[in-house]
Length: 112
Length: 113
Image (cartoon, each protein chain N blue to C red):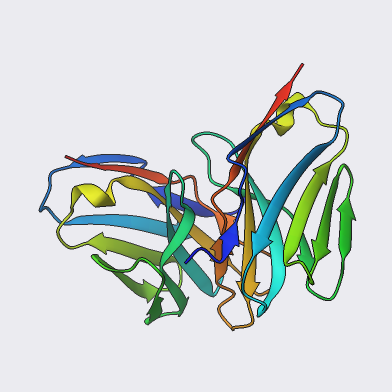
């Protein structure tokens, strides 16, 4: 199995609270991504990183921020969680073009 | 604007028969296409891919066909097996360094015994 883990696996939080999801890899891959999966929308890119401290926005980045201070860790933060951010969040890593992504097992986040 | 579309939310196929999953895209700048398979409570796993310079790629029971003029690709599974029951996502990659993938909505495939 590729070395990518997400934590926590499940989280319930209240509206307005900050939440941080963690993605950790042991593959030393350059690229890391955060996606959310919602019914009828498939997987949509939130943010991605192409190196330490190098990040950029995806198509649904509003309300989210990311940080990557080490190659192996990519953090996704919801500054003030809203019910619309209830979703399943997937982290992915890739080495280079042509190999596709390797995904983590996901974090199911519920905002109540 | 959905650049990658899977118009069939679900598909049911008899075991042993062929499963055909379809995907359409709108952006002619996509240069690489992939299929991912997802089981419940797991992350998607890479299945098969195809470069835009090819029209077919085969890997065991799985074949992907690309029709660039129609901006359409399909995944054929022959023969279908119960373990193929999963959600299948089509994805496309833009000609950019970070290999960002754009995903379709997914098709839930059910293989009936």
